[in-house]
Length: 392
Image (tube, rainbow, N blue to C red; front, side, top):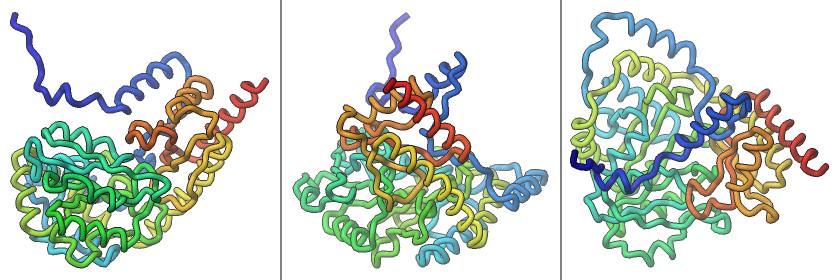
């Protein structure tokens, strides 16, 4: 039999770090390790009971199980538009400026396929969400990483950006509140990014799933005047409404960009399940008490995560927003990966090493807040006990 080899794009990407590491952790647990995982950013709580009731009721209706429109239900688009108006002060046309997606991660692929030909340049942050890089490789784009550093406040260095071959670059990924560092952008930074995109004809793709986590002032880049002309913003209910497994996201942009993205999307998926869209529309109508309760939930967990960082002698910025706590390992530790492995194999606690987000994350670790307080406290206890045993 003649040897079968995969497409080049398959060899250009690696298996997702968490896919491999969670498999290893599962094997350790089978051996009785009982690992506490503080690695993944998947909410551990359920959506609102109102949302679940809507899903259950509408799923029982016989006519709700057929294919749906590629542009989603009008009810969902209108709910997204009102959500953006109420929470961000951004007015969007639900008919032409909003496109529901099967999660915003899917949107990363759709946007890349829409704007990037093989060989086109794309700006990817370092550190940043690994999917920006892997999807760029899958579509054959040329990746230009731009540095985000603690010294620069994890914000783009526009002087450095201007030195890149910008004529060859068509798309720039940004993400604020930033994952993994938790940095919240300010309005002036968003204004400069929009100005930069317009000046060089670079589409700005803003990935915005964390704006409601530990954040009293959620922001959208579309708040900047004229931003919609050059920007696409992705948003999601995964974190803000505990609906990660539902895969409910959206893209917001000008009608032309949305129509182009729809061309790609309509050739990839066949729409979303109607009861889930109806339930998502109800999720978007939840009153402010939902967001207040969410804030308090993560604030309690964040305090324990900070205690873990202190116990590990890791420095962290207390102004961080979002679903994680990002900390710099002490000077006597070689790297975040070294500390993460030490904790996994000796304290039976899994935290994420920062190197997976880029070279600028090598001296950092990330703790997820997606674990109940009792688990976080147990992790802290195990780390203290390991440190005592290590000294003795």
